[in-house]
Structure formats: C-alpha cells, structure tokens
Amino acid sequence: RAQDFARAGVSLLHAMGCMELLSFGSECGSTALLCETAQALESPEMRDCLRGCLDEGMSLPAAREKAAAQCLGKEAAALLQGANDALAFEYLRALKSLHSPIRPLAVLRKGARHDETGCAEGFPSAAQIRSLILQDNPQGEKRLPSFSFEILRREITAGRAPVSYSAMETAILSHLRRLSPADLALLPDISEGLEYRLYEGIRSACSLGSLFSCVKTKRYTHARIRRLTLHAFLGVTQGDTALSPPYLHVLGFNDRGQEVLRRMRDTAKKPVLMRASGLRTLSPAAQTIYRLNACATDLFALAMPQKQPCGMEQTKNVVRLSSTG
Image (tube, rainbow, N blue to C red):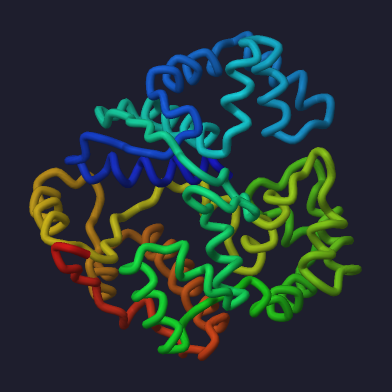
C-alpha cells in the first residue's frame, strides 16, 4: 500500500539522521497545496466521511476521493486522483508521525501519468518503458537516457534482464495452491474474510490474470490483489510489514554518497549494513527481515532470462559509482 511504502521509505531517510529534504514527483507540483490539503485530510470530519464511504463497500482510494469531495471540495478530491499526489500525502503523513525535520519538496511531473502506456509525447511512464523493453521494441531505447540504456544493454547481454512477472507465473500459482484460508489470513492487508475469496480464486484460476480478475471487486482493487498474491508467494505476513525497517542497507554510492555515509557514522539512528557479514550484529527481528529480502532476491533470480543461483544478496558487492554516474 502507498502508506506502507511511504512509511518505510521516510523512516529510512529519517533514520539516516542527516537528510534535510525529501523530493518527490507530483501532478500538481505545489508543496504548499499538498501540505495544506494533507492537514485537512486528517480532520475529524474527513475521518467520519471516510468511514461512511468505506461502510458503503468502496475501496480505500475511491472512498478517500469521495470523502474529500464531500468534506473538502473538488480541488482536494482532484489531488487524490493523481497517483503521485496521493503518495505525496502519505509521505507528509509519515514525516508528521515521525516528527521529522526533513522538509518536503514537490517536483512537477511532466508527460505521461503513472502507469500510462499510450503517451506519445513528453516523458514516458516507467510502465510504458517496461512494456517497450519486454516487447523488444526499439522505441524502448529512445525513451531512456543513453547512460541508462547502456546499463540495461549490459544486463540484457549478461542474461539478467528483462525480468517479467509472467516468468514466475507457474511457480507463483503452484505455491498459492498449497495455501489454506488460515495461511492466507496471515497476509498483510487481509480483512473482512477476503482470505476465503482469494482462496476460491486460487482454486479456480489457471493464470495470474484470471486470478486477479475473479478476486477483484469494487471493494478490493486489482493492485491490492496483486500485493496479496506476491506477499503469499514471498512468505510475508502481517507481523513482518508492521515492523519499521530495522536497518539501513547500503546498495551503492558515489563520491557525494560517500560523504553522506561518513556523516551517518555520527547521525544514523539504525544499524548501517554494508555487507552480509554485518548481519551478525543485527537484532533477531532485523535478521528475519534480511532473510525475507534474501529469499525474494533468490526467487527474483529465477525470473531472469538466464537463471541465477541462490545467494546474490550475500555475494553482490556494494556498487561504487563514478562521480558522473
């Protein structure tokens, strides 16, 4: 969910202890307007309206938009229609809940909207670029900066890209068929007996597309069903997602990033993990999260064109980027 994604990301930035600014894409591009609307969305009147809309059987995004229109007006409701603005509200909520000194900065998004695949002009969406690459369409190269495409070309040559959801379809379905309603009830964001509807969908579906379609309703969005499916496949439970990220895992850095890492020696509020050997110093809860992440990486390796063995999470070194990278 957007709120989980935002809470985790913001808590990591906050834990670094040296970040001053959180910049994010926005359809409206106005930090002031987003902050003002975010505060209004937290009002008691808005919460009552939202509860009433949810009681009507609406999904959370649709309920929030309708409640905002009723309580705050059309302008506020229009902001919730933008995927990036809706996520921005969750960033702002997370900053407030952490009492973080990090300042938000909205950057106007130009070109295609989130997940739009038919935009011919301006900046394309990530979904459009992924679609072109999976189709081996030469337009994919033209839609990327040259240095980004060189990285992609290198990964394609090495057999590590592109990776598609469909490559793991049979593996995901076979795992799901082993689960009981009680197993599904442990998933994050399961409520109102949704585990039974999901279980019946799993029993009848022969593809992920048919599973998503038959479980989806006005109340349960396509995105929510996809998340539940992946959580079930990866073994992620409610208890796992309830935890705040327990460590800062460094994946790569450039010269400027190295300066930030030096500052973090004095400012970081959570352990900084540079390599797998540092895992021994982490708490049991942190080690559990690391093992889940490593398992997800091992499964991801099976979706690559040239399948990779287990252990990439433990054997891949931190990437050192050039000052121009």
